[in-house]
Length: 249
View 1 (cartoon, rainbow, N blue to C red):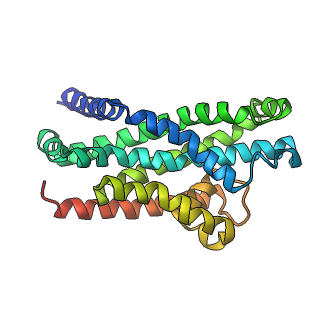
View 2 (cartoon, rainbow, N blue to C red; view 1 turned 90 degrees about the vertical axis):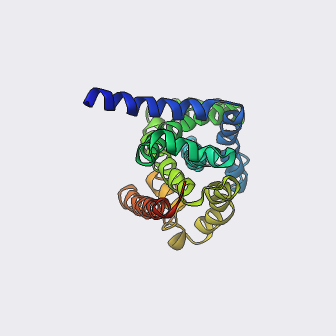
View 3 (tube, one colour; view 1 turned 120 degrees about the horizontal axis):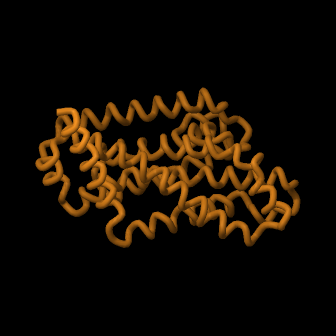
């Protein structure tokens, strides 16, 4: 029985990943994983001011901007739900797999695609940013000291992907969820974080920024920031459960 159950779970996860990577939409997500850091970089006037910073400060700026890929990971996590909602196949998936099994499979798949989004984003964003940096800074980026920032960025993207999956289940509308996962963090939460970190650090994006130890004043330390992010995640998960209990598929 246990072996059969494990096979079912593996099959469900595989189906979710195959569905996610089918079509050309995945190319758009990869593009966003490079474009979002560049959008925020322009907001912060980097790398135009790179020559005014030390190599260490430029490395910190690079990883701070890399952490914004967590926003794309959030969208990627939601896309596992909203894609099916958009094409009208969600009801069929619920009937075929069972609601509990489907929800669990999508959450696990969201975690996987969030980390894949981060990995591809680091490559795409890093390669494009490298052309704007001096050889000294590029060398610093490849040093073991530089990569100590990676674990925080990984955790932020992982939490973001699960947060996005919850929003996908709550909203179940592609365009509205895209606004919630990408537009609001960039157009609303980022300016608040930059201008009023005492408020911004408690917002979802501000908490993720704290997890990644971004070099902004006023952010929560990684541990408390993770607790705030988990609180947001639990609230969203509770909201998803409430929606699904009332939903008739």
